[in-house]
Structures are given as C-alpha cells and as structure tokens.
Length: 201
Image 1 (cartoon, rainbow, N blue to C red):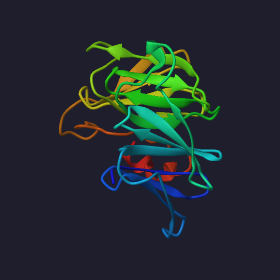
Image 2: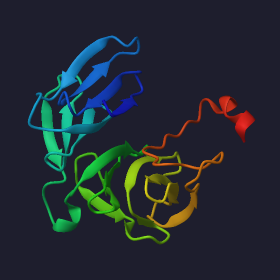
Image 3: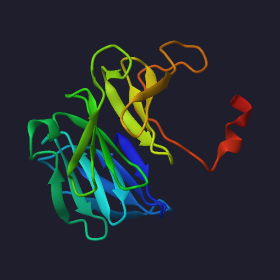
C-alpha cells in the first residue's frame, strides 16, 4: 500500500498497486470492500468525493471513477479530448470544497484541474526549475479559500497557488534542519487539531 485517504464518514481508502485494488476500511478499521479487479491496472492514490471514489491508475494513465456504495466503475477521466487535457503520468489526487478534482501529473510536470465529471478546466505550473515550475510534482491539497498546495520532491518544497493558478509563495527546502524536507510525497491540511501543533510554531 502506498497512499491512504479518509472521507467524512471516517472510511479509509488504501491504494495498493501490488494487490491491484483499493481497499476500504470503516472507522473501526474493519474491512468494507475492495474496488477494482486485481491485475491489469495499478491504483496508486484514491480520494472519495460525495458518492464516488476517484482512483489514479498509472498503468493506463487515467483516473478511474467508482460508485462508493457498489464498487462498480462509472467512467474514466483523462484519456479523451484535446492533448492539453489528457493525462500522461498521473500520481496523486485531491478535491477542493467546490468539487473540482486536482490531478498531479508527473509526466506533464503540472497539476491538472477537472470538474467532478471529468471535464478539463486548466493546467497549473509547467516543467522547469523556476518559481511556479515543477520537476517532481507529488501530492496536493486545497484549503478553504481555494488555494492549492503542491509538493515537489525535487525542489523539496511546497508551492502555494491561488485560484487562478498563480504562484503566491513556497516554503521549505532540502536539508536536515527543522522545517526542511527530503523527498516529500504529500501534503495535508488540518483545521481541527491546531492545538497539537502550537508548541512547534
């Protein structure tokens, strides 16, 4: 298993590319169900939104969409349309509060934004080594104001973009000092447990 996400009901979705399935556990860590047939695909990240589960399939370079309750596949995202709206090497997923899906694409060195039905909206960032560029983009998160936090495992930092895809700032760098990063893979936002982190600010 390489990625896990938790929905509003406390259900955990674990992406297991070797098993070839996404395995769901309830809030008590009891097995619920598995999504997808083993073999023939490679799920590496899974995120639930409303009644659907969105899963990155790196073997087919798409995002598969499943019905959360039944486990049946509904559609694929990222394999149709203009070249600018197609996925190359998707790795990570996140949703904002409005229901827009953000797909990190390591092959395109960008984060692609889709609506929940798979219609392409925009691409954020571009390949390079300057501000607002990506070299090894990884996990993302979107805050309540719609700002996108995007990890880059080559720059060892997190870049912050506004709703229009414009870079606002970045934080951290490579190193072994407090606050430094080394091959970061994902970022998460938390509004409910700030008291745990206050001693470190």
